[in-house]
Image 1 (cartoon, one colour):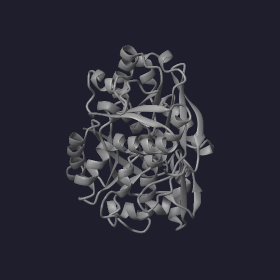
Image 2: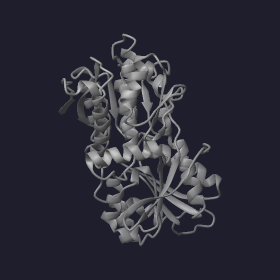
Image 3: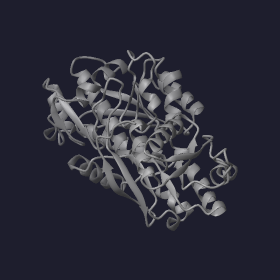
Length: 417
């Protein structure tokens, strides 16, 4: 476990540049996916959280991080979460982006302990109804439910293909997205050839599973053999690196459809960029605008080029909202407990109030200290929490071009299927 403390010491030289001073702060645990099937995402999301913390520190507010690795797996993540709560005494946990981690950790650790957890990337529709006792309200996310992404995926696929097979990671994320996709695809005239679950651990081969997509009888009277038009990869990058390559090498597969979990330039590099040229996918997107441009510039200045993997901006927003909620509570003389942070999240995230964009923390702290409401509009878009701790967001349709991921279009105001 790595511990990182971001402290700002205000000297006589710096004092004139800050109109807000605050003696408080908060302990934040991070449970990002630094190993396992989502290992590429974790370090990038930690960078985003640290960027928000550094900017808040420059405005007079301290974040103390305690870092743990979810390993993109439920059991080690539950152990890590319990350590963050019991040993490190954190008030809130940010992460993971795996619904297969978030659901069991919320059910068995954070919600029973009344500890706030906020995920930047766990999109399973099942999370909307957690915890079962909604009065507790200790689970939030800054990404939209796959009830939205699945609807877009289904309509996109139906416009391109007649039949589809689905490979999906057998956890709350994969199951939820696969079900939403199937419903939307069939509603729009498509036929699902077969649904193929696989384990969360990365296997060395998926050839036997792929046989079901490319050599299975799919009609009973009369029997007919054939293959689906497209293989949908609803997994994580490390899974897809194996089975997409096998689908190409063994079954001469030509057409694939991807999602946020397989939005990965590393995937294209692993299987050969030319093999995925023009292939499309979806992911929660961020509307173009000043907030997005500001975040992209700040991230690039601090860490280099902003990666194309999803939920980096969502992570920044999660950390920003937690810091703002803590400040709002402390201006009222309240301790930064999970309950007090939770009770102020919607106050700083939702209208009405002064518009606050990424990096505008000195302005935000000044407004809150003066007793004025604020409305944070994030790097990932509006993060207005509903009664279930969910947000709405546009869905990006993207495609591979020369091994890179480029945005094809955004779909706004998507109706759930």
